[in-house]
Length: 170
Image 1: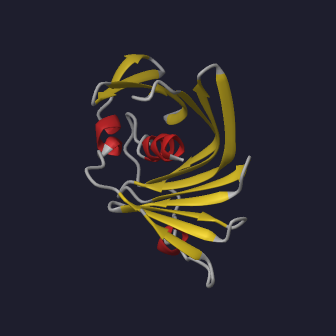
Image 2: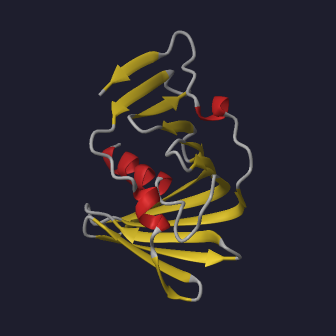
Image 3: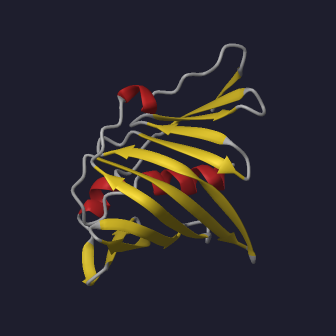
């Protein structure tokens, strides 16, 4: 779970590379390579430049992950539970990647806390983000149908925990 949350957090904060945006939304495939194995996650995300975001994972296990400046809320309907974790000292990677350096016409690079991020851009929109995290996982996020600066209602990014769900505070 920790690897998954770290990969998701970095992904959430990654959508500003070389771009100025108010919001970004896209379908995604997130592949995590670890110890010779890989796991693919698919879904849709919504992110705003104020570091609020929602990742809706459709497979392999449906879940919704909400991020804001202070916490992450993971809602797992199959388990009827919500996990709430505080985000202490969370780096503002959106800001770091917004200042990423262009190293080729369609490739940007950002370095934060010893981790290198490579962001491929097409038509001013990110299409892939590749990095190796501190746990030696290689992560590749492929975006499809990205939309920049569309209105994302605040309610979309506000978690609503269904009545009767177990709440786990970490």
